[in-house]
Length: 90
Image 1 (cartoon, rainbow, N blue to C red):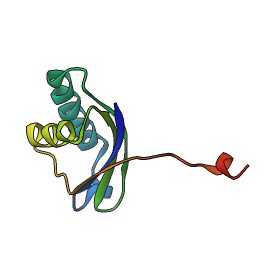
Image 2: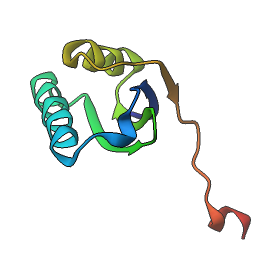
Image 3: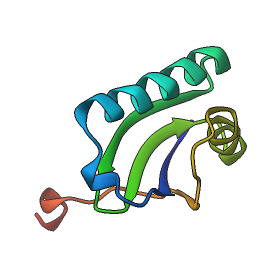
């Protein structure tokens, strides 16, 4: 399976309440459970007007299917080719 970054346009995302974020998370987890083992949500970063979500999936089609089933915006999907961090500099 590959790692993907999904960009979701969600105006006002940074002002969502903890309860709203919980509801979004529950919806996502419910859809993932229905879909089975071919896709896994790792984490998401909430900014002022977007969510950047990290998923592991068999392919991009799984990512888009999750978005469709959950009614989630899916502005862009990018497959991660490699990960770097400060240790890469050593």
